[in-house]
Length: 316
Image (tube, rainbow, N blue to C red; front, side, top):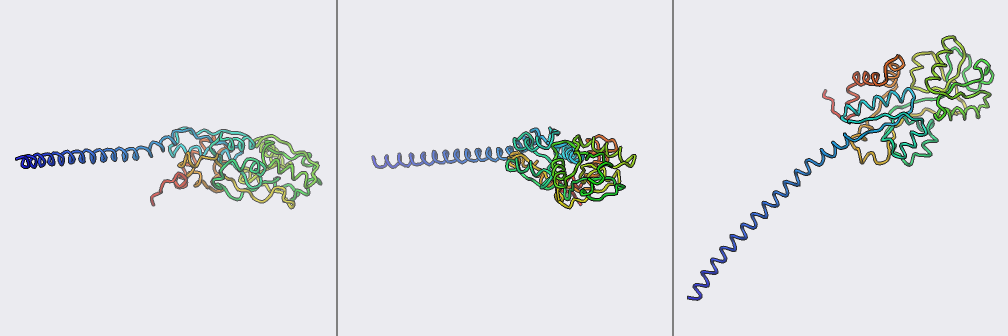
C-alpha cells in the first residue's frame, strides 16, 4: 500500500511539476517576445527622432560680403530650408573672423573659402582646426583689373603710367586675401602706388565712375564677378606670379559637423556649381534684386541641381 500510494503521489507531483514548468516557460517566452517588440519599436523611433533633432537645431553659415559669396550663401540658406532645416542663419564677417569662427565652432560651415592662394595665410593659421568638405566652384582668378581701353597690359607697366591712375590701386576690405596679394605685388614689382582699402561696393563704384568717363583706373578684382558682364575689362598680366594661379572656392566646416549633422554634411559634399550659375545670381543682385529674391529665382529655375544637392532622386 505504501509503495502504491507513493507511486500515485509521485505521478501526481510529476504532473504538477510539468504543468508549472510549462506555464513558466510560456510566461518567459511571452516576456521575451514583449521585450523584443519594445526593442524594435524603440529602434524604429530612435532614428526619426535623431533626424528630427538635426533639422530643428540652428544652422549657422559664415560668409564674407563679396558678391559671389553673398550669392552662394543666400542660395545655400534657401536650399537648406527647402531640405527641411527650420533655423538657418547667415552671418557676414571679414575673412579673418570667418576662419577663426569656424575653428572655434561659432559657424557650422562656409562656402566662401578661396584656396589655395587668396586665403593661404588664414588656412595656414586655422586649417588644422576645420574640415575641408568640397570644392564648390572651380577656376577662380584674382588680380589687378583695368578697363580694356587702358593701353597697358602688365603690372610691370603701372609705374610708367601712375599719373593716369592718380597713383592709386582701388582695393576692397583690408582683411581680404586679395589685398594681401596686392601688397605682395606692390613689393615685388616695386610699384610707387597706394593701395586704397574700402569695400567691394566702393571698389565697383569707383570702377563705374571711371568707365563712365573713360578714365584710367586699376582695381583689385576676381572671377567670377558681375563686373565682367557689365563692363569691358581685362586683367593685367602678372609675370612674377604675385597673385598665384587660379583659385577654387571651397566649402569648409567646423570639426564634428559630419558626425553631429550627417544630413547637412551630405548636402555640403554635393554642393557644386558653375560660373554661369553664380553669375546669374550676382547679376540679379547687381540689377537691384534683393539677395534672397535672386537666390529664390535661381533655385526655382534650377530644380534638378537643387534636388541633386539635397539628395533627392529626380525621376526621368
